[in-house]
Length: 163
Image (cartoon, rainbow, N blue to C red):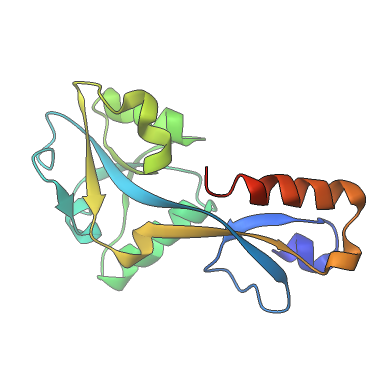
């Protein structure tokens, strides 16, 4: 969002929870954060849980300044706890592989679990949190500020928003 505001980026795709005031926006996609656990994990039998229930267990996390990590840290602080970092990984696929190795649990977008959905050693648990439902937006300053290429990209993304 800062890059779009400052003009170093023509377009941005971000959570709509960001301050998008003064920018043009188009609804893009939505996803849901879910808890991935090994089938032998104490939480594996749950169909849905509150995030606070995960905080007694070690977690696989993304780098400290990642948007998801910041969101989880704030949610933990809101209940007077901290996320127990066991492993820091660079992406969600690595997080799921760490869960598969039974190193810890991970909070990941439901959209990335597809390749692992039917793996017998993994369970995915819905989070009973409003913040776990994420909506994304395409943002840009003004129509007249967009180059032809940026306009084409925006329209391409907007056309595929529901896919």
